[in-house]
Image (cartoon, rainbow, N blue to C red; front, top):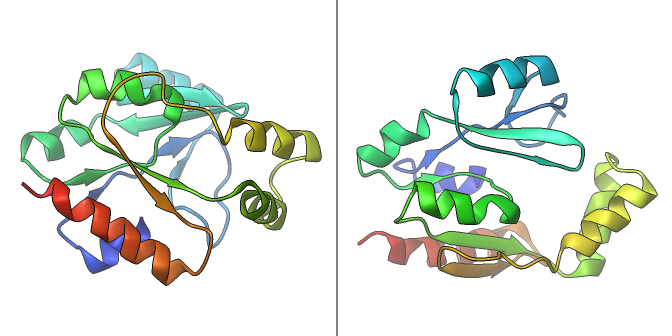
Length: 161
């Protein structure tokens, strides 16, 4: 998503709020404590929020402004929240960036954030279907970053109507 934004500065990429520490070189997000997350949630600061892998994730309500301005908005979400997201944002379309299980396993191991059991749980969820909701376009990210970025930009292009 960062590379897509670099190539398409008109995109509004939403910075998530997550209850884990930031890791150099990883996704840029707002790291908060569970208490701070819950305070923000209670204050209505999130358009969407969910819990996964023992962490809390939130999409700030500031997304509403970008959507109301008619901008192309990207956010990194969870398949489990896409139905709710579609209800909240009826024009929502999903780009599912995925990779094969062996590639995912290699990337999770290299990341070093999960235990072996945690990796197994994440890999088991790799086939999880979005229960209902928006149209989905799939980008396979099994190889070089450039190929994935080109595929991502290609499927993003038709959303500009």
